[in-house]
Image 1 (cartoon, rainbow, N blue to C red):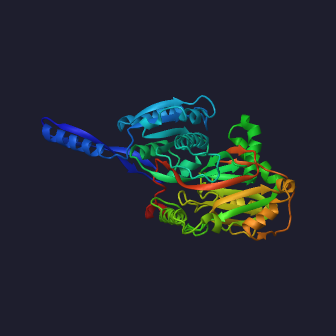
Image 2 (cartoon, rainbow, N blue to C red; image 1 turned 135 degrees about the horizontal axis):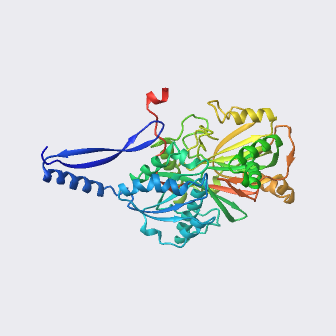
Image 3 (tube, rainbow, N blue to C red; image 1 turned 30 degrees about the vertical axis):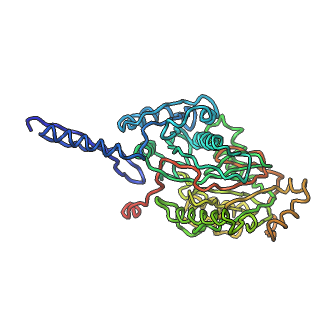
Length: 460
């Protein structure tokens, strides 16, 4: 061609194991006018894609994980944003809660989304800032456990740069900065449930992944004393907590999620375009409409169940909590946006049996197939330790009136301590008595859920 004219189209190319890569193809043409027509038409089509962000607010945690957040953004993410004509205001956080506090002050309406570069702790900060700001602007009191929270308009994007990146892994399928950046650029959207945690009508925290008491709470509490050791502190604290084999006596009261169409053991994991999440959301809305029009007063007909006992662990999982070290997670078929949480109760058992249970988090065996493990899909739950119950003798009578029959069995087989702490998405909650409520699809992410692997890849 004597006078070649050309334009290059960049596109997303799927690679193995949920990875995405940016690829390109160049088109050549001898006619300059025709070439310009193609360019103009493509630009007009791209402009019509309103789901794609144009201006983002980016928070970078330079201290999380291996302290690579700033480098990851500058070398892997920023070039892709520039290529896609996505502008960004970048804030490098300087202290804890920097991102959360700033979200209450800045004008967030000029942004199409918020991106956090870091681990699960960084995501939690942005989550608390965005949800808190939304409720504040709408006049919602976060301290009211019964308040219906308002859904956030802005989406959050996660660029993984932490130690586990559980939320990213459960929503994208891989912890890869380039893949996450491409999901943000093309404007993917994924709804996610958020649980609110209260104590004595005071708001404590929001949770999107794991709320754990007993084993996982003890691990976190012990590891906080060993921060100087780096990431190896979690392995050491986990081993120490396992050997200690402490259990905790208390009462768990929960409201079963009657609206959900799935169950914790149905082997139907949450995937892209999840039918269970969609259908459960619809049934929950139908229930709420009945209550709104006075056809049914849900507060009066709610049937709470109560279980008393001694527990090695009490876990509430809003998602699978999968990560590279535990590919299935704590609850393999927990759903991201069905308005429920999987409540897992691990009763007192021998140290050997507990080890067998833990090992199943790393293989394909059913981790709930033990006599000492119970799992329920719930909308709300409460926990009070026996230590606090003894201080308030009327609690059991109140429970019988409100919740119905109390179940209590399983013999003792390990030492009992008064109280543990709650592990709320990697942060310590010192109040053992909590009230937890799941808010259906309160948050939206720049993600699409884990895509089903092609048949040839699944076999390899």
